[in-house]
Length: 430
Image (cartoon, rainbow, N blue to C red; front, side):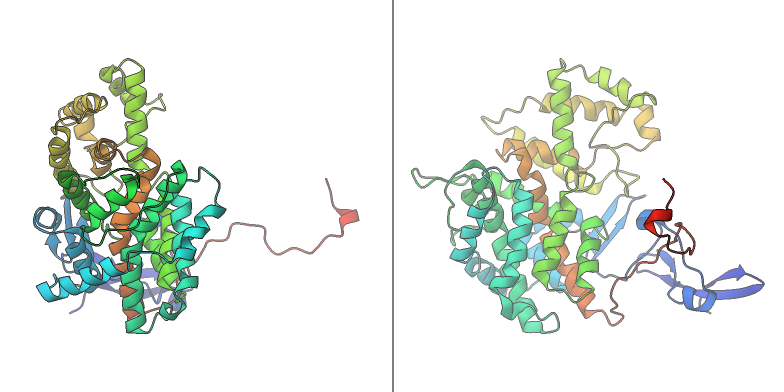
């Protein structure tokens, strides 16, 4: 017999079915709550509300588990590439060699942007934030590719996916070049996805540039670790905007803006700023640990703990190995690394952090790695956006194919004035 939950209200009892996910999580199906009882639920931040059923990503914050389409993130990061991971997330299964080659071919041959798009960059100020530029340019793709806007046409959607996956690194690199006044570099079809991005970011027309393959590999894994993370703020934005049957370009443009918020995509930037402040204050790590423990001190240790994970973030273990690899390369000097290592050592041994489960998360080391790769701090959220793009696309695509598709329309609990009569201006009290 199917499991149900009973609700008693005003002398009546109502039953609602309990749904069970693949990995044992359970949810009360309240889709008929308002029509049967007249009630709605009140859940600020949607902390206890499931907005959809999804087959893409599973995470268990208590156990520190993250699965992409059922595959552990540890295996994906070790054995896969970012492009293969994107195929997995978007299309549901690990691709065959033929399918991967097809996907790779289209990403390579769609990586250039329309020349007129390059002119749009001239309309921005001299030092725009790259996230603002990226979102604007991604949104503009809907004007250049008007034959790929039908969200119910499978072929148009496929082409839009190829265009967006291929062009975002180019758009992002051009956003950086615009911010520093350097000429744009065309994509190189002979390079991998990550290597091509690094070349567009750092090469100049006046001198040769050779991509550091270790750097490209590290970047590829970083992108994999950020590829999807269930129903977070930007992913929910993609779904909500997409629920109006809005095209993929505009939906992802809105997600980039959501990611730009400091509470979402700015966490690794906050880590770097914190480490820099500690460094500039003499590097006394213990002093700042005590400040973090003081309930009357507003200081917070950034990069520790997670809204969802109440155990080790599984991505943090992977990224720690990446950090060790990149920091050990000749010429890699990062003065903030010492401070970061001291903080990590304290956090994994100190009872205060253990009891509160404040373990280092994925943002703790990613900013340091980006710094070592010479990626500037204002590009950190852009790197996050490039990595998260396959997840956004997969979530948007899953929504459009959902048989229970509905436009998003959250309810509210109104707390304003009750009904009242209009007062003429001469009769209003000050």
